[in-house]
Amino acid sequence: MPARRPGVFTSLSAILTAAVDDELISANPCRKASVKAPKLQRRKVTPWPLAGSTMAALGAVMRCAPRLKTRAVGESFGWFR
Image 1 (cartoon, rainbow, N blue to C red):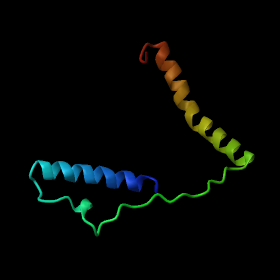
Image 2: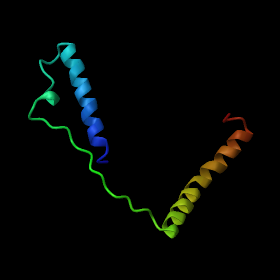
Image 3: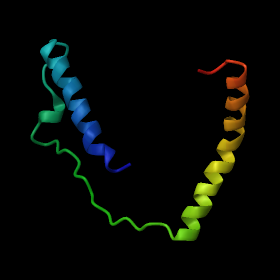
Image 4: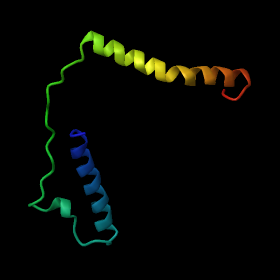
Protein backbone atom coordinates (compact mmCIF):
# COMPACT_ATOMS: atom_id res chain seq x y z
CA MET A 1 0.00 0.00 0.00
CA PRO A 2 2.72 2.57 0.76
CA ALA A 3 4.08 2.24 -2.79
CA ARG A 4 0.76 3.54 -4.15
CA ARG A 5 0.86 6.88 -2.32
CA PRO A 6 3.23 8.66 -4.73
CA GLY A 7 1.16 7.43 -7.67
CA VAL A 8 -2.08 8.63 -6.10
CA PHE A 9 -0.55 12.04 -5.45
CA THR A 10 0.66 12.26 -9.06
CA SER A 11 -2.79 11.31 -10.40
CA LEU A 12 -4.52 13.80 -8.12
CA SER A 13 -2.14 16.54 -9.21
CA ALA A 14 -2.83 15.75 -12.88
CA ILE A 15 -6.59 15.89 -12.30
CA LEU A 16 -6.30 19.22 -10.50
CA THR A 17 -4.07 20.59 -13.28
CA ALA A 18 -6.78 19.68 -15.79
CA ALA A 19 -9.34 21.45 -13.58
CA VAL A 20 -7.12 24.57 -13.60
CA ASP A 21 -6.84 24.36 -17.40
CA ASP A 22 -10.64 24.09 -17.63
CA GLU A 23 -10.91 27.09 -15.27
CA LEU A 24 -12.88 25.10 -12.70
CA ILE A 25 -10.42 26.02 -9.94
CA SER A 26 -7.93 28.85 -9.74
CA ALA A 27 -4.83 26.92 -8.65
CA ASN A 28 -3.58 23.38 -8.14
CA PRO A 29 -3.12 22.89 -4.38
CA CYS A 30 -0.69 20.02 -5.03
CA ARG A 31 1.76 22.51 -6.55
CA LYS A 32 1.94 24.76 -3.48
CA ALA A 33 5.32 25.01 -1.77
CA SER A 34 3.83 23.81 1.52
CA VAL A 35 2.58 20.54 -0.02
CA LYS A 36 5.13 17.76 -0.33
CA ALA A 37 4.61 14.60 -2.33
CA PRO A 38 4.87 11.44 -0.23
CA LYS A 39 8.15 9.59 -0.49
CA LEU A 40 8.39 5.91 -1.33
CA GLN A 41 9.63 4.00 1.69
CA ARG A 42 11.83 1.07 0.79
CA ARG A 43 11.42 -1.98 2.98
CA LYS A 44 13.35 -5.20 2.93
CA VAL A 45 11.13 -8.06 1.80
CA THR A 46 11.44 -11.31 3.69
CA PRO A 47 10.29 -14.30 1.61
CA TRP A 48 8.07 -16.95 3.14
CA PRO A 49 9.70 -20.21 4.16
CA LEU A 50 9.13 -23.11 1.77
CA ALA A 51 6.46 -24.72 3.99
CA GLY A 52 4.46 -21.49 4.18
CA SER A 53 4.58 -20.83 0.45
CA THR A 54 3.63 -24.43 -0.30
CA MET A 55 0.62 -24.21 2.02
CA ALA A 56 -0.46 -20.89 0.44
CA ALA A 57 -0.22 -22.37 -3.05
CA LEU A 58 -2.15 -25.46 -1.96
CA GLY A 59 -4.84 -23.28 -0.41
CA ALA A 60 -5.19 -21.30 -3.64
CA VAL A 61 -5.57 -24.50 -5.64
CA MET A 62 -8.20 -25.80 -3.22
CA ARG A 63 -10.19 -22.54 -3.49
CA CYS A 64 -9.99 -22.51 -7.29
CA ALA A 65 -10.70 -26.21 -7.89
CA PRO A 66 -14.53 -25.91 -7.75
CA ARG A 67 -14.43 -23.03 -10.25
CA LEU A 68 -12.22 -25.03 -12.58
CA LYS A 69 -14.61 -27.97 -12.46
CA THR A 70 -17.58 -25.67 -13.13
CA ARG A 71 -15.81 -24.11 -16.09
CA ALA A 72 -15.00 -27.55 -17.51
CA VAL A 73 -18.67 -28.52 -17.28
CA GLY A 74 -19.67 -25.19 -18.83
CA GLU A 75 -17.27 -25.67 -21.71
CA SER A 76 -18.79 -29.05 -22.44
CA PHE A 77 -22.17 -27.31 -22.87
CA GLY A 78 -20.63 -24.51 -24.91
CA TRP A 79 -21.15 -21.79 -22.25
CA PHE A 80 -17.51 -20.64 -22.33
CA ARG A 81 -15.36 -20.27 -25.39
